[in-house]
Image 1: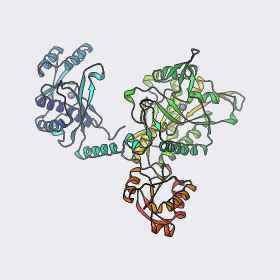
Image 2: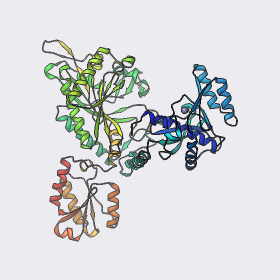
Image 3: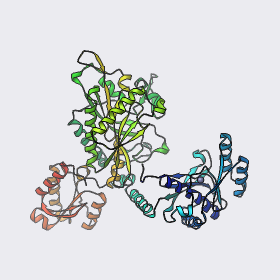
Length: 592
Ligand SMILES: [Zn+2]
Ligand SMILES: [Zn+2]
């Protein structure tokens, strides 16, 4: 995920600021031991051992202010090559009691036989390989960096080692960019799908079920199904049929597909009472090959297009799990097309159309990346390099034909074939890889998949992997944050909230709700004893697209007053006109 393009200069600025932070810490907390501090995306960090006096986030402004005080005296950088002994000696005295972290780094550099350099700016010297701006005082804008937060980190990322304090900073070429980034982060926090998922009552986690295993509420389930229905509608129009598979398999299937060794750590395995090894499926493709392989196909029957929305399971490490973005059980809106070489282009274009329609509906802007093999590291990829080159060239032709602008991601291909990745830009400008088109010639080879051609010969088929959302969970995490939970009408679990002015109008409210339900509009009636003001506040919190306010005037005229979540008060209209209006908006799957 990248927010702003990082130029080399920005990286130098960020790295230099890590030094400046360490210098400020040295002055304010002389007992703290600096360890390492690199530049990162959007900023920098530095890890310190603060000993028994931990640092608080509230201490950051003081440190930041001192960085600004020091900066003008950092006119330039000087560096000198030193022997390991000299370096060790320097860090023995730089901090009281010496710095065992730097000593360990120096030992390693010595073992590697690497050149050891010390870099100095102002009065601060650090062990470093270089990569700074030449004149910090003039190259760095004092108002374009900030310390953002602290976090725990282990020395060398090893949880058995010393726990350190990591201080994070942000740095951009200008204050304007820094401010924009901070604003965007605050907005992202407000939109965090984990927070909204709870507020909108979409999903939950249970300690008894375990981490990474989301449980879906009625509203969340509805949302998932509506998305899946949409994808299915797009597929059905293009000749797909549905298939179904079990969630476990004998080891043999994944051995043959190559996944048993490739995915070995991520597989949930179990042994049956008869001693057979089984695994929960981490993916569906090998199963679908066996549906295809159930009979011998003639070229006249090709292509075969199988769609299957189903859950997959991967044993992700607990520390990596996060909301719906990274889970252990996820639902793929999966599909596979088995076709002849001559049909690959048309089938790929069908998938492409579905992707564009689907993501376009949500207002995502799509970027395209051609992910290829890496000729230097063919050990990571199955099959012959000439097959790869031909496949990549095919993709290039199609990209040209569709006039798609794209970037090339060398080494980003799946292990069995190149792919076209679609990257969606959300409303906050963040980028997410969302869908792919992959033509796979390896799996049909591994499983011996063929059709009989016009000459009566067996012809190897090609397999296209065609998930649109990929994982519904991950797609929802992106979509919830993209829309801030303001789902378009067609996708809202509750579409209309009916708000009677008081109990006196409950009967009329019920008749209006029923009339809308008859038209398959999802309605909820707020029959609580709350005031209208409170009812309206609750309606807004639930982010339901429309509310109907009903009182004496409305009942008399058999009308409703329509309020829109996005546009405010719309006006007064009959129930008939209202349902017409809503159905039109739902049917068109209008976006925001
Ligand atoms: Zn450095
Ligand atoms: Zn697949």
